[in-house]
Length: 171
Image (cartoon, rainbow, N blue to C red; front, side, top):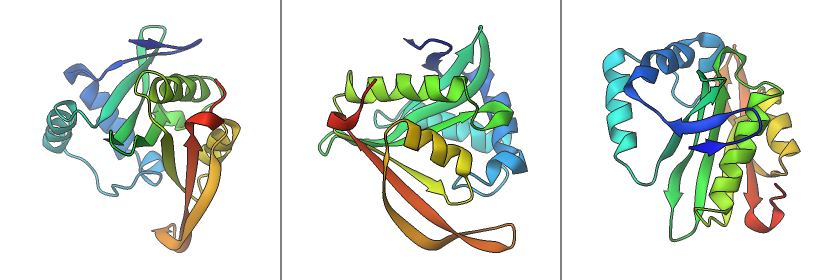
């Protein structure tokens, strides 16, 4: 278990899957994820079995006060190039001012400390100002954009790519 000031990160368990699926299928949340379709219970179970068996996927349930409040992780971990994709959301809030920054700090400490990664990156849609503010507060640098990469709410939006190097991380 990884702990912060307000949260604890632990392995995702089968009992978490339905809550995670409900959050994931909420249209207010789904707009911020790469996967656009509703996820069935069978798809959620298959995802869980696939990712929990993959050593390059470090996914965690985020708890506060003993209850599940979100999920996050380091995805597509490349142990040769020492990099990973950063993922995080807090329940219905998606990004809040307490749990999200604390969980993010725990994940980044884990990435650059225990895992010895050199680089962590994240893709954020341009309309997702909450996630942009979070990653910028954490020290991520905007490195590039894919123009008109996401069609959402009747309009095209850019994908923004942020990166953080181990020497830039200030826990």
